[in-house]
Figure 1 (cartoon, helix red, strand yellow):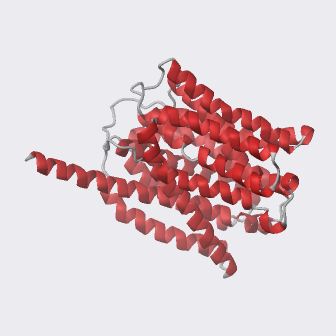
Figure 2 (cartoon, rainbow, N blue to C red; figure 1 turned 135 degrees about the horizontal axis):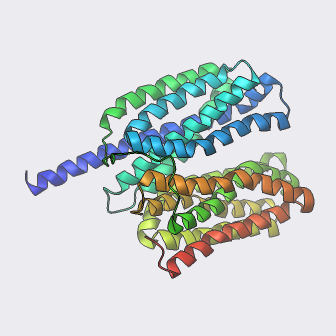
Figure 3 (cartoon, helix red, strand yellow; figure 1 turned 90 degrees about the vertical axis):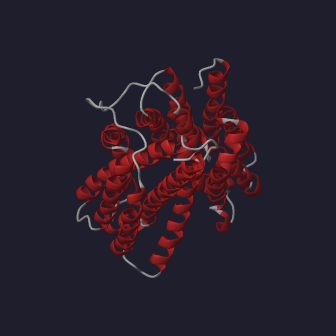
Length: 391
């Protein structure tokens, strides 16, 4: 085989794998946002107040956290392409089961399994994306996360349409599931095992070393900020900015737009600046955004602050996955899971921290504290670079 033919075959192979991974990221985003779009109706169906409904939704958070170690083991044992297919289909089946859960208990159990399945799907997708990245000299990983965000926006719009057409959640979920399963079956043949699975016993969890622990701390800071934005940004506008009704979601919308856009330009920025330097810049942007919002609680200024936060948060997780995938101490799936597990502490605790501080000192003080947490991204990244800890 000539060198030109080998190069051409490599280009075709990696192009197919990249498109396949893109499709699976898109499906994951669609499922996530589809469920979110019908949450109010599900709450109304069971006639639960906000506190009771919050407890039910927490079952999914527990599933997300509990699923990480299981996900690592499954991906290591069966490979990321195979688990992308299997967990993707299970994820879609569970989505449909959520709509027909007869009791609060069965709904909570299904949400727990939904969370576990979501983590297996996400870990398989991200592990595969790291393996695809290794086939390219230039960064491509951030764009996968951009596709996920774009899928969320598309699914939210579709959900709004189905709601306006009075289509029940079950039929909404079923239509989406059938279309997605067809896509999975169409593209699964293009998947290829990129990394041989080592023989022997597969541990459920590998303790992260210093390098991965520091990446996990950065993930904790970033995910805490992201969780706060998803859960508290609209409340901040209502209670602090106090705009006209038409502008209540302006900050959240600005955050989502720049977070999505940032992921599509992220690969070029990574190539130009490098992942560690970009992490330091991202931390500064997020911190600056929070303090603009705190110091200038008017619509225009606060919206600009949320634009900064979204742009800063956009590629923190893709950057961390790139850096985690570089370690030679453990397989990529375990490395990503270790970083994500530490990060989830921030994602789950951030909204609770803001609620507690708000109750005692007010929401502006709470957002100022989260701004300090965001600064941790830059500080830890600088520390790792200074001490030559980056792989």
